Image (tube, rainbow, N blue to C red):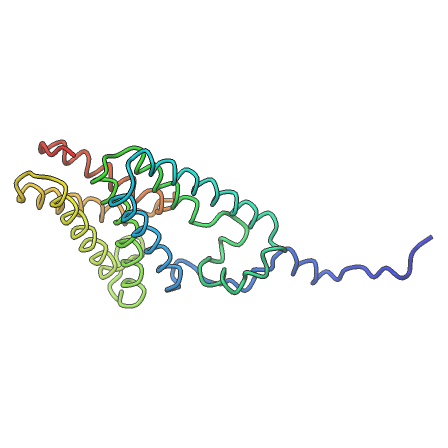
Length: 232
């Protein structure tokens, strides 16, 4: 016998339950300052803790745990959106529209930190992490707010200039602190690597730049440093 007391769910209610984060409209071209600040602070804190407090082995253990936790949280968030609806007030400030039903950039970000520290010497890893943490969001902020002259891949000269300058200052400062070679060689290495890294940043790859930027930065500094006899 059919139960007339059961009221079927309205189709709109089902859609609302499946996609509770439909109010998220931010894209890559959105300024989204809270997201940029989280991006920046995470990298700066990771680099600072690694530099001042952690050995290479301890840093790998801690980042490995963090990467596992972030991956699990992201799987839960995307698999059970109805339970995460209560956090929409936070999500809309730090997530983009395309991240509603898939893993956010936090996964490649933490993986990039782990792989960079795992693979490269500490000075190079710090340069790469801070380039991701500072140069990447800074170039986006400058490009979105002040970028009037567009060029490769739709990016602006102003944003690319901010990326180059910050990358150069980061590598020069860290390498001068960690190496004892003639400062002119460090200046040459920092300038040359910053030009190459800035050019690479313009390539419209489909791979998340949170993963490619630090790894390419570290690899470039490592190869160029070895070519002119700088050891780390």
